[in-house]
Image (cartoon, rainbow, N blue to C red; front, top):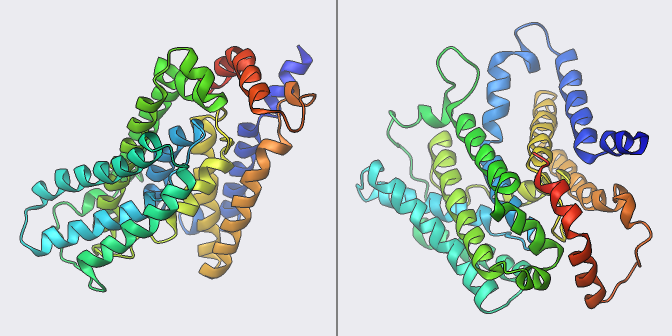
Length: 351
């Protein structure tokens, strides 16, 4: 009983929650009542500032659970933003632009899926390549131009809070997407399959899971969510540019890994990623209010990314401490099959 309580207390999600509380406590201590960090206006800005990152992180989470990665999400966002600007500049109505852009994001995700699933290429190499490809296509569409003047009746959805509250409309969308991902990952058979694939793809296939179909759908979902994030980003800054969201993929990956999701797949929770996002947003806001330069903030993001890679090693579950350090592929598959029951139950219910 004591071991079980201690294991729960030492879970990475608990450590992140303590870190999150600490960041907000430090920020609040340096602000006067109704102003500074603790002011409703700043909290609203804090949540809004990370809305696109959160959407990209929730898009990445299921993919990383399967042991894959999509580093092209920010470039997909940039291309979709450039496409939005191109269509708007050509006189297309915004109501028509929205579905076209979302379909374009899904199409870009499908390109990644075909290369990874159908051709069996490593997702890391593929998405590094499409990261550059999609960003280049964005420049083909817009070049160095910036398209502005988007409709005023839509902009409040990406910039303003709900009347009478500090909660932005964009944050409500993020909460909805996060809840949907949580239900998918932790409360459905498909979610259980994600963990099984991450623990051992071959074992998952022998269990009847359609691994290729699941991965294909996840890359399409990633592209679609990146397109939605592009619409929010474009409206929030009232600017469509080819370089929109450059480098944001690293922040999204850092949030996912810092949230306790194993880069090798098979372990992680939506709660951990959501808490990591909140902690990172709070830390960025505190640094912003203290006039810390973007260069230093980028250094801190890099350190968080390194820390997130160390998380699975430092907080390794007790039952794996006696496992061989370098098991063969066959041993890995056998152990994944043997341990998958308990591992899947623990992670599948970890909302």
